[in-house]
Image (tube, rainbow over all chains, first blue to last red; front, side, top):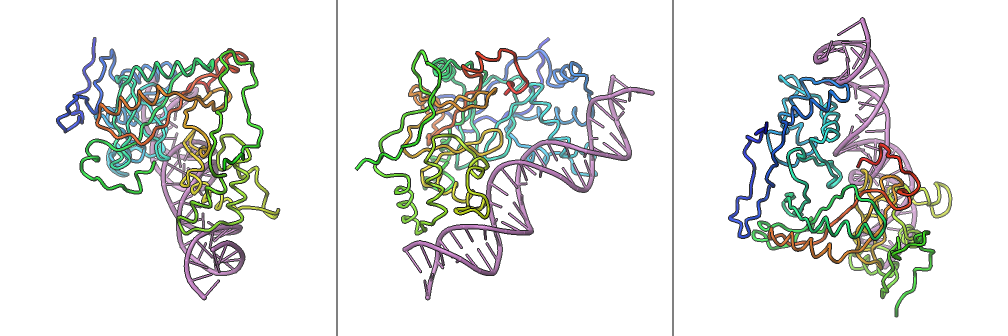
Length: 184
Length: 184
DNA sequence: TTTGCTGCAAACTGTTTGCAATGTT
DNA sequence: AACATTGCAAACAGTTTGCAGCAAA
């Protein structure tokens, strides 16, 4: 059975893109929903399915976007409201989600940025230093080049992280003048 | 006049490397010493050449290695000793050095890692998740691939950061068994 | 003599942890 | 019942900042 859980409105490039490259990647078809997948993970580790965890998985997979712990907490119910989750639990859960393969994370400007991993193809990012937007891209050649370079050093690759910084199309159009924050 | 300031012993691969790929990159020939270059930068900004700053540039460029603020501070004179530099000043200076183009920095495991930039060619890193060693490599193809991907998105590239993680040659030889810390 | 720089200590940010109470199996 | 999980608050690591005295230019 193939789950179709990506009901949420994906944010795609608003521009009429000449080369038709979407800003967001297409999802893959996967056998389990994130919830199911996480439950499997928990069981395999003798851990427990709890209300906060279920709630967080739901919230996170209801949108396709990059986020950090703080941004996530901002979107969750406040203390006193129903379904409130303490930030300690948010931090603990995010680590588990990464461990479970649901999320991916990387460092950007000092904070930890998360993105959906389960159900999405591997990719890298373009980072606009003006609007701080992250744009995903896929490149098979990049992988090939990476492996070639690693091979020269007898290095066994397990993964990589690449961040290309610069100015995105919209920012390049809208504001020509350079700003301090460009210098990354 | 070409300065020959790289008198320090560069750490190169100890192994008899089949493909002769050095673990450290060759330096470029540059017109000014780091000190001179920094002085130029300071003057252009109306800032001052001071004893702590001179001392730090000297210490840092006396070795070729990656380091973070803490590691650097450890190698400097302690409080009370001559040439002591407070850590606040170390942090402030490191930022200036990056700004001046003397150093480069990137995030690794949460801390900020610095490396010599002035006098060294651009490169990327292999990161061994067993011994935590950073190995530098150069790849023109990587740049080409990067620019191609960026072009598809109308993205103007200013730079990039790539970190390939895995297991280095020595660690691959010496210890076969997997460890928790490998999973990066 | 002006103004940038330093050391100090305190503040800050993002994240982790100990613990007693609570929830899940 | 057994024990994993939670919320809270305190702790933490790495880094930044305000300020008064000090030092380049």
